[in-house]
Image 1 (cartoon, helix red, strand yellow):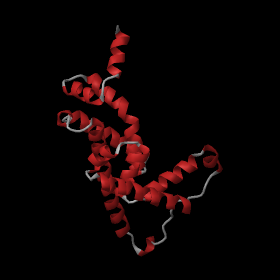
Image 2 (image 1 turned 90 degrees about the horizontal axis):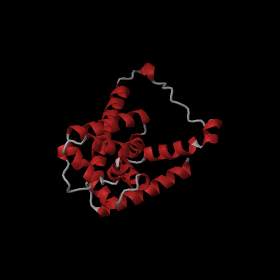
Image 3 (image 1 turned 180 degrees about the vertical axis):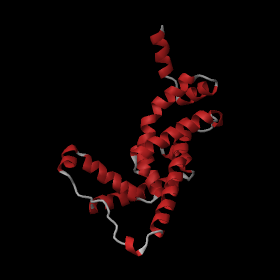
Length: 194
């Protein structure tokens, strides 16, 4: 009996889960977290290129979901709504980073002109483990302009539909397709030059 009840719960759609959570079912929230934690972490990491901050932003995403559970209305897919929350938090973080970098470099004096930048040399262990290739791809994605980076991550990494991406970034389908194609071309050029 318990097993049958658990199987039925795992077959609930995301929209059914959020409705149950809105009605006070905490198990539904836990199931949403279980379903989306890894996907959102992957998305945000590829967006901001920092694992620790990505995990923090995903926690913030779930906190916002918990606090604003009644803000979701079933006019869009739940996945679109939660990805939009995560994307907005990531954009805010990137804006803060830019501000911090500008402030840091503007405060440098003449004695600080020689900056020690981290080396980008390959280690044999990274090559053997295949991590270097992942890092090259992640670095190439990170170099894309933000509007291209978001589009290609949502489509090629998260495998969302064009319609979902349109809803998340708030652009028409033609713009989304164009950004994805341009991002792929830039990414291809970047990878060839690395």
